[in-house]
Length: 536
Image (cartoon, rainbow, N blue to C red; front, side):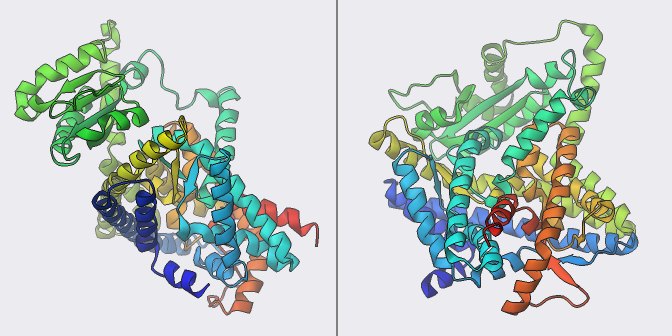
C-alpha cells in the first residue's frame, strides 16, 4: 500500500505516461517509439494542467469578486475536489480498489464484455470515493467493496458507449474517457438532448435552417488525414495551409495527422473522407477514400491544382444555385468565423465575466487576453497529447487484430482532455457566472460554488457533446445538470463535513459545512450511496 501511495504522489503527469509506456510495450510498440509517445503524453498533460491551473487562478479571482459583488451567502462552502480525495484515501479501501479494478477490467476485456483498457490510475480515487460514502454511512467493508465493483463496471460500460463518440467528436482514435465524474452524465446528457428535440418550439431554437446555414456548414464538413514520413514536420505545415484555405471557403475540416508508414492503419481508425500525403504512399497501401499528393500545397499558388481536385472529388464542387440566398449565407459565414474562432470567443467571454466581476478596464482586458490564450493553447496541448497516444492506439489495434480478429481496444483516460475542444471549453466557461446565479436562487441548494467553479467545463463534457454544437441546448442541458450537481453536493455535505473533521481536513473558518461541485458531479456514487444506505 505504501508503494502505491508513493507512486500516485508523483501526480498524473508522471503516473499516466509511465503506465502508457508499459501498455505500449505490452502491445509490441518499439521501445524508442514508446518512449517518444510517453514523453509527448507527459508534455501534453503538463500543458493541459498548466492551462487549467492558469484558468482556475484567473477565473477564481473573478468568481470571488462576483460572489462579493452580488452578496451571495450560502452555508456550505465548495472546497474543491481535494476534500473528496482526502476522504477517499483515509479509508481502508484504497488497496481494494486497485486490485478490484485490475481484476474486473482484465476479466471484462478477456470475456469481450468491454473494449476499454482504463489506464487512468490517478483518477481511481473516484471509485474509492464511491466506496467511502458507503463505508462511512454503513460501516460495512463488504457493501463498500460491492459499491466500488458496481461503479467500475458501470464506468467501463459507459466508456464503451462513449468511445466511438470521443473518436468522432474529438478526432481521438483509440481513446475514450473512463472518468467517473464526467462519464456518469453521458446518459443524462443524451436524454436531455432527446427531450429538447421533441418539445415544440424548443426543438427549433439553435437549429440551422436547411436553406442557408446547412449549405455552408452541414453539407461542407469533412474529415481529412494528412501524413508525411515523420508524422510531424511536413504534415503540420500542410495542415496549416489546408485549414486556412478551406476556412476561407467556409468548409469545416476535421484534420488528423500521422506518419506515412501508418496511414493505412490510421485511416481505418479515423475513417477520413480524403487523405493528403507529402510523399508517395508505401507500396501496397489500400485506402477506402481518395488520396492526394499534397507537396504542391507547400508551394503557394501551385497548390490550387490540388485544392481543385479535392473540391471536385470530395465536395463535387458544390455551389448553391440560388443567388438570392448569397448575401444571407455570407453573413452566416462571417458570423460563424467570428464566434467560432476560439481566440475571439475567449475575448468575448472574458469581457462578460470581467464586467460581472466589476473589473476596471485594465483588469477586464487582462482577463480577456488570458481567456483567449486558454481557448487557443488548450487545444494545442490536447493535440500534443494525442500525438503521443497515436502510436499506442495503432499498436493496440494491431495487436488486438492479430490476437482477437475484429476486436478494437480503447485506452481510457481522464475526461479533462475534453477541454481541448473549443465548444466544450466555451460553453463551460459561460456556465461559470451562470452557476453562481443558479446557486443563489435554486431552492434546496446550500453550496456556495468557489474552488471547483473554474473547472465546471470538465463536469459538463457529456452534457455538451450530445447537443452537437447547438449553443441553446448545450446551455439548457448544462443548467439542468448544474442544478443536480448543487443538490447532490448539498445532500453529501453533512457526511463529508463529519468525515473531514475526523480525518483532520482543514475546514475553512466561517464554513458551517463543506462539500464541492466535484462531489456533486458523482451522480453514480450518490445513487449507490443512497441505495446501500437502505441496508444499514
